[in-house]
Amino acid sequence: RKCGVVITGASSGLGLATAKALSETGQCHVIMACRNFLKAEMAAKSAGIPKENYTVMHLDLASLESVRQFVDTFRRSGMPLDVLVCNAAVYLPTAKEPSYSAEGFELSVGTNHLGHFLLARLLLDDLKKSDYPSKRLIIVGSITGNTNTLAGNVPPKANLGDLRGLVGGLNDLNSSSMIDGGEFDGAKAYKDSKVCNMLTMQEFHRRYHEETGITFASLYPGCIAETGLFRNHIPLFRTLFPPFQKYITKGYVSEEEAGKRLAQVVSDPSLTKSGVYWSWNKNSSSFENQLSKEASNADKASKLWETSEKLVGLA
Ligand code: NDP
Image (tube, rainbow, N blue to C red):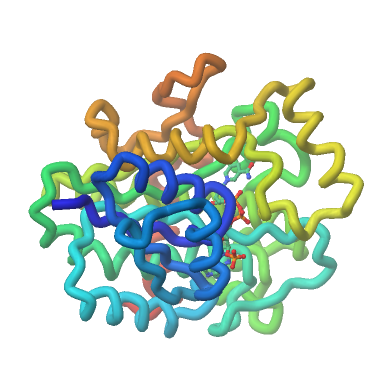
């Protein structure tokens, strides 16, 4: 049978390119878990993904109720879950004030981390049930949260501190809209959320890999400078960022190439190692990359896990 792959945020950018690459193998059925149903349908059509290779299902990660509804709808569909890809993200670098998810969490961390945390925790049971030989749970990371890299050192740097803002509920009413308890900064909130993604992957690995045999992985697909992620940035940035990445940092990858990379992490038989953060070198060969000190701190990962459980209503 075909491999059942759920991809969040498959209506554009990396998620769509990955859905297309997987569809082209002829061995996968992709469930596109998207907040905008019509946009996702149109994106799949214009990418030329054959109808029999995908299903669009509604998921808004900025609402925990919607996450639970998605899990319900998915289960009722009777489709198997063999691989889950947590890919969707928002990036709000120019926001002066925080905006909030349905449950009142700062939107970047609420969407990118807390929504995915609940989704992955609930769908773990479905992954366990799958009889597919290589089951995987992938959470897309980024170089920007890794302060051991040049890109990760561009201010404002990611820093979760002692998680006091998250413990307080991640809103300015009760504590702070930032995980470390500091002043709101949209670019930092995104980077912090990516550190959470990478810590969560490792904590899943520590808690569940041996027991379940599921491969847990994260990755940095390269700088895909033309995706919708930068839609909220100032126009000058959007004009200059792609050539800067192409010719100066040479970190640029096309959406198509990045999609092929994530598709490898989904289905390549040689990428089954769990607990790994994959990157690609200039020749497009994958290698196991090092995470920064904070993004590989096991105590922080465990505290993040327990705090997130409380916020999403699992504890
Ligand atoms: P895009 O903006 O093109 O794609 C993001 C996707 O997430 C869109 O499909 C968007 O939906 C979806 N999304 C946003 N909010 C929600 C929500 N509340 N519920 C459900 N879906 C939502 O960006 P990219 O493709 O660049 O980003 C994909 C991943 O790649 C992210 O995890 C990002 O951090 C990571 N990444 C990107 C890099 C880059 O250079 N672009 C570099 C490193 C990592 P909609 O279409 O409706 O807006």
